[in-house]
Image (cartoon, rainbow, N blue to C red):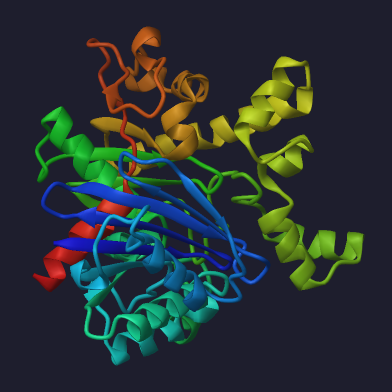
Length: 396
């Protein structure tokens, strides 16, 4: 079975065509600057990357371009669209309506749309991508794989906020969590590699990138996670503030003369390590600046790592122990210095990092010493493969 995995952002569309038998990507690509001018980056397996500059006024045009490239005589990997058996879509927010992936129907589309206010930048784009695929390939099953679904196993003690109950009852204000597909894939892979008992295991997954979150996975199920109603809560991130005193919003709005909307822009796009350093939201830039003596860049990285270490401690308490700590995503997989810095706070858990083994980038590996009481791993995430697996399970 060949599964096309689609991940629509507000102005982008990532895709992979995956052969479910071999679990290999036949082609990967990215449409960017949708609605601005448009660029398609397409790479067939074993081939050279192709870059096409062409106007993409909307996601439907982007989907059409992707399908044209997949079937292109020179750069394509399939003869025609009939070879695509199913399409799996990443959908950011499913609210409480979806605790698992689903085959998309009109009812499912309506329910996703009801969650738009909870993810205004993402869900509408996800819906556009789904509708485009339905229009171009009628009859091909589409599935929705939700970022929030994996965390629906959390108990009220973890997902409720200390607000009047009607805020939850009427407006569904609660912790939802995100990056669920990644947390699910990575925790399951760590359990398998380390030989842990899936029914008696405690794993903390650190998904560290420009957007970052941590989850506590007990017996294969999410019991707590750092992101909340939206992806703004939790860790200090690339441009997001993470946890702050809510009164700061009112105080700065008055002090700086900002509207509520302007404050939300500040918290989402002007804060995090970018705001702290004044340099960049990219940790590679921060490292270079810190090496040149930029104290703010160094402070920003230290603040980030410290917050991660605090959450690891909290989630160890939430599960009353931990068997493994796993690093994933762009920063978690590639930055051995940050992994070592975070683990330097975890001596009380008996964590010991093997510096030689830890000096790796995006390689699945145990990076703790044999004597370490808690195993530390790097597991490259593969959300597209996870979506493809979910899709196959639903449509076969």
